[in-house]
Amino acid sequence: GPVVSVAKAVKSSPSLLYHLAAVQCLVWVGNTSWNLYGGQWFANAVYQGDQHAPEGSQNYIAYGDGIAAFSFGGQLKSGLQLVSALTIIWLLLRTPLRPRLVYAPCIYIGFVVSVLAAFFVGHSSTFAVVCMTLSIMPEAGSFAIPFGLVATLNKCAELEGKPVSTALQMALLNCCVTIG
Image (tube, rainbow, N blue to C red; front, side, top):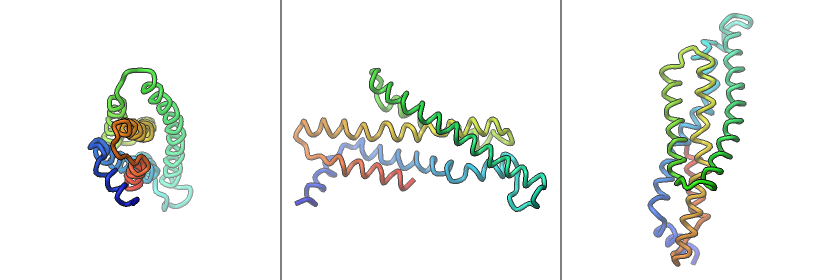
């Protein structure tokens, strides 16, 4: 029945799927950290603001300025995500580059800007905005590349007569995004 066919599909899944799943989890832990704590980082660490300071005080104003910079960085991040996703798709469709050679730099950029943000930004708002903007690269790569790889691998497996469950494997990758 259906349970047996799912078990066969999982058993015959390529090892690349499990590597992709682990990478997706780690990428999304980083993405979630930026998304959930970025505003707090801007307001408290970069701008040295305090939302509980007396209204009108320098610390209260600094907190508002930090949140405004976070919002501006988020807008730039959205623009870069659109451009980078289209660039990734173009690269994969129009060049002989292998997907991992496109995805790995996306992840590496995210790693580097996270380290820069943690240890070198200090109170530089411009540097913080640049780091936050570039932090979108792993997310852009994680949406454009792993799902396409799974679809391609399953098409090859299907042509070889192996049992495949593209929906199950896509669901696994989506679960990894949720875990992150």
